[in-house]
Structure formats: structure tokens, C-alpha cells
Amino acid sequence: MKEFFEKAAMQNHPLRILHEFLKREEEKEQAKKYEEMRFVGYVLEIGYDTITIITSDPFKIAVGGVPRNSLLIMVPASYDNLPPHFTLLRVLESAPTPLSKEVQQTYFELQKKSMPEIDIFTQSELQWGALKTAILGMFYPHPEKMYEVEFSGDLNNFVSAHKYRVYAPDDALLN
Image (cartoon, rainbow, N blue to C red; front, side):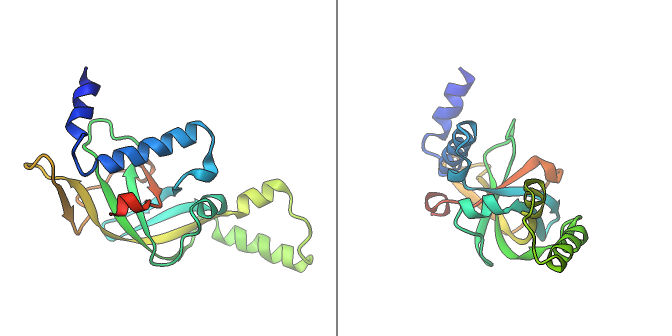
């Protein structure tokens, strides 16, 4: 019954599009249709001004690439008792990972050996990287007007980095 009332309340809400987007993503993930997902990665480091995302080549390829200045959204991995909301991010540049030095050493060794065939394990490890993003703001339900969305040019609050997922939004979500 609770789910029925929650769905009814969201029926005409502008953030319904976010709910539908995340539901489609979850269905694609369960069906193992990863190449159709808009998922870009996980949050590695979070602050009030910037967020560093860990991503991999297959994720970036699936969304058609992640160029500089492209827009991404960060959402909680689970909403539990939270209202629907998302943070809008702009990609700034690539960022180092905790393993950047080891990856550089591996590339250096491979180049010295004229790039021999790379084993599957090494390929899998080398495809990971990070992106630094700027926080543009947060969209969330208006606290008093039921069918309106508020925008804050800030990150109002955040929790541990592992509690977020990052997606490349589709056109419907951006509109």
C-alpha cells in the first residue's frame, strides 16, 4: 500500500523522470545489458566543489564517450528514506587514481618490450581511470510546493563516496 501512495505522489512530479531513468538502469543491469546502460562510474572522492569519479573504458564507450565539459549526474546508490534528487556535474579533466604510478610503470615496461600481447587480467586493470568533475548544483523536490523542483548551486550535504553512482543523463532527464 505504501508503494502505491509513493507512486501516486510521484505521478505528476517533475523528478518522476529521474525515478524512471533509474528504474530503466536497474532493469538493464539485472538483464546484464551493460552496453545499453548510462552508468559511468563510482565516486572515488567527494567534496563541496569537486567530485572525482572512477570509471572504466567499457562504461565510457557504452555512453558514447565522456568528453571534457560533458554533464553527468550523481545519485545516491539507494534512496531508502530520501526524496528523489540528483547532483549535476561537469567533467573537467582526467584525474590520478591511487594506482596511477603502477599503471604508468606497466605502460613503460610494455613499451620497452615493444608492446607484446597483453593478458586479459592486465587489460582489465589498465582500463580503469578517474575523472575530476565540478559540482554545478543539486536538483531536489521543493520542500513546500509538492510538484516543483528546487535547484541549489551547491552540494547541500553529502555522505560517504561509496554511497553514490554516476550516470550520463539522457535527453529526457536534462530537459
